[in-house]
Each structure stands twice: as structure tokens, then as C-alpha cells.
Length: 322
Length: 297
Image (cartoon, rainbow over all chains, first blue to last red; front, side, top):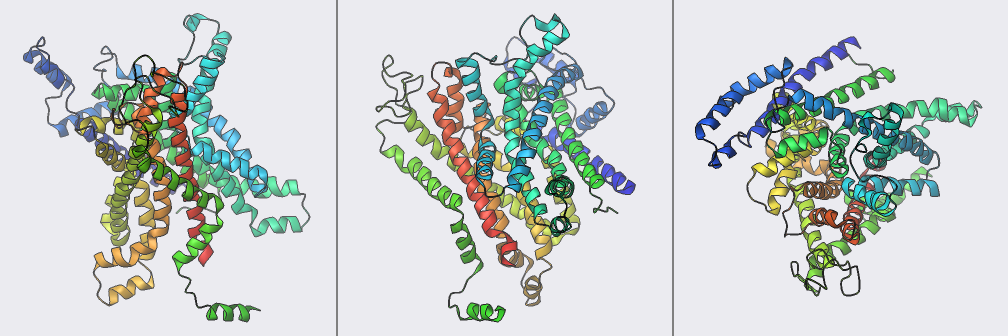
């Protein structure tokens, strides 16, 4: 186990560097962010050249990559070019909080709904419940995230006026007592959490169902029943524990979808999170900020996958890694 | 009993090939058959429909009487803020969205097949390099990069969108095909082909690829639906197919500004996407069941 762990962690290092290199190259295709200033007659070319030099955009690309990567590693993430020159690290740490709040909520809601339903439809295969939930899961998988957001906004925000139509808190609530502030924010988070969780719910349900079905037809369940165990024990102790193992991989599989889903959801509901920050940075060609955002998101993905793999290895004793 | 069965199979005159059996299994999958019918109707409507509607794509009605009309017999899906007939635009948008869906899957598949097949067949260094590259591409969040690429690649055409979706859509196919090729290259018929002197290229494309087709078809079917959603998401962010060319995505994006006063503009293009994508997902699911190798062992 320990050798497996070390090997996996070591394998991640070239992946980290590769991801950084590829994103750096793709972003460099856009050209340096100061080029557009040359069009402006009010800015002297000499000033643009000075700015370029200050930000290091006059260096050859390989030098720029090494300099940038080294400063990323040493914690110097630089300044954002367009967000008033604020430190990237400050912008990111502010944004990531919002994203974590509602995406963890969505993750939990998705799992809490999807797994029991998946198990239930597997146990009642080919009944009306199974068909209804299967239809529901296909619905979830095929729904464009932002359209679902629009519809919820239209119904609960514009028609019924139950919930706010965007943002993260009511203006003026920043200094309210903790509990009131929490209640206020919860109101804003209901719709985004539902939209984002709906996105994964369908596929998680299908996944749980098929994983459970696989186990239900195993011989050891027949053995357990044959030796007279009550059905409840058979399902909970013998079937469920084995069916849940592959579901751990969902943790890793769900991450990419969650990240792009979060981007769309944040745009629909005007949440100032990582997704919004990344997209805005890309659109403004704000190189330091865009690179930092992309790198964080990709590294989260890689680490999430690793954690899922390791959990899988820990939970399933049948798997021996040498 | 068992002997009888074998005997019966032998006298059957029909040669039950793999694809014949797949078709037979698929026919039993009612939802998949329903999806095929539904998709045919949708495709037919989108391709032929616009020739028969009363309005053209960008025809604007009277500025005072035809703007933001609720759905009626005159305008089945209502009109938008410029007085354009939404029904006509949804049909035409369907052409673009389906075109993007199909052609991006096709291009991504081409890349995926080449990368996966050569990595799996040759193994060694080539495999390591290609698969590590695939890992890298897998670890980068796609959506922001699509945004960047759509500003880097010049032009505003449909083919640009196809290209950028394909550039980031080939990795899953590559992994599936590599996995298939890893086992297929050890098969007897691969060895036999080598023994009679077939070139590597011929073995890859003529002997091994047809045997890896089943998972490719499933992934392609699901991919069309997925890419239609991708196009819509890109359009929503303002980087998809550029107006005035309609696509389901940009009709929806356009609709969000009038959401409070004209909800019908949001419903119809979204439902068009939802129904089409669900049909592709059902079909893909049916195909996966029908092509399951465990059925034919």
C-alpha cells in the first residue's frame, strides 16, 4: 500500500508540470495583454514597452514559463492585470470560498438523493419506481445546466417571488449577526445548489443502480439468503457494502463535471466564485489571474482523482497494489 | 436437451452475424427504437421544415405588432424581441446544433481513434507519451480553454465551434480505444494477419478497428448529445455560434434578457435541446445494452 501511494504521488509530479505547460502554451496563443494598448493613440508605445518589460512579457516564452512556474511554486502568484492590480492570491482565496460553499452543498445533496434512489431502483428492478427514477436520471443527464437554472429562476424568482434571482447575499447583510447572515445566504444558495446537484444526480443514480445490480446477482447473496439471514441484513451488510465500493470512484469522476457545471451555475446566478473569476480572467486576457485559476482547478481535479483512487484501494481489500 | 439446441442452431439457414444480433437486441429496447423514430422526426423537421414555414430566419415583423408575441397559430412558438418567428428559428437552429453535434463527434472520434489505436497497438514509448498527454488534457478544465480558443482561432463560423469542441473531446475515445487495442493486438487473428505479412497499418485499420467498433459507436451516440449541450453552454457564455446564425444555444442565450416578460422564448429552444439529448442518451444506452459483449459469449 505504501509503495502504491508513493508511486501514485510521484506520478503526479510530471502531470502537474505537464498541465502547467499545456495551459501556459494555450493561454500564450492569445498574445500578450498589452498588445491591445498599442492601438490606443493616448498611450505612448514607450509606456507599453515599459509595462511589457515590467510584467515580463518581453522575455522568450520558455524563460517566461520557468519564471512563472517557479514563482507559482514559491507562492508568489503575482498581480492581476485588470482587477485593479490586486494580488491574484487575494482574488482567488476570496472567490474559492463561495464556490466551495455551494458546490459542496450540491455534492452532498446530489449524493444524498442519488445513492438511496439508485439502490432502491436496483432492488426493485423493472417496477414502476425503477422506470420513473430511470426516466428522471436521464432527464438530469440531458438537461443543459443553464437552461434548468433559467427555468427555476423564472418559476421561483420571477413568478412566485420566493427566492432571490441571483447574487450571494442581500445588500446590507454583511454586518448582520452570524445566524441571520447564514439564513440570508441560504436563501440565495438554494437555487444554485439544486441546479448544480441536478447535473450530477442523474448519472450518479444510474451508476449506483448498475453497481448495485451487479452485486445483487452475485452468488454470495444467494448464500446469505440460503443460510437464513433476514433480507434486511442481506441487503445492508452483504450487498450494500460491496456495491458502495465502486461508487467511491464517482468522487473522482464527478469532479470535472462539477467544475464546468459550477462555472455555468455561477454565471447564471451571478455568484462571484472561482468559475466566474476564471471566465472573466480569460475574457479579459488577464494572464496571471487566468493561469492561477486554471492551475488551481486542474490541480484540484488531479488531486481529487488521486484521492478517489486511494480511497478505492483502502476500502476494497480485494485490490492489492504492488 | 442441449444436443437438440445445438442441432437446431446448425439447421438454421440464417447466418446470425454480430450486427444482425445487435439489431435484434436493439429492437427489443423500446426506448431506443422510440428514440430513433424521435430523432428521425427531429432531424427531418430541422432539415426540411424551414422550407415550408411562412417566415425566414431573419425576417422581422412589424415593429409594433409582431414583437414579443405569445405563441399563437400565426407564430407557433411566438416571436422574439425583433419580431422574428421563433418556430422558424428553432428549426434552423436545430440544423446548426445537430450539425455541430454530429461533426464535432466525428472529428473528435478521428483524433481519438488515431491516438488510442496507435498507443494501444504499438505500446512502449509511444503509448506512454500519448497516454500521458491524454492524462494532461483530461486534467485541464475544458470550458475556460474553449473560451480562450474561440477568441484565438479567427472567424465566427460553425466549423470553428466544431473544431474547438473536437480539440477537447477526443480523450475519452482515445482511452476506450487504447484499452480495446491492448487486448485485441494479442488476439489470434491479429497474429494470423501478421503471419501472412499484413502491414501494421492494415492490421490496425482493417483487422482490429472493426472489432473495437461497439464501444466507439456507443460513445459517439452519447457524444452527439453531450456536444449539443457543450455548444449551448458555449453560446450561453457568448463564445458559441455567433448570431444572426441561430443555434439552440444562442437562441436561448438571447432569450434570457427577455425572461421576465417573454418566458416562451426560454421554454422552446431548451425543450428542443432536452428532448434531442435525451433521445441520444436513450439510444446510446440501448446500443450499449445491445452490444454488450457478455450477451454474445
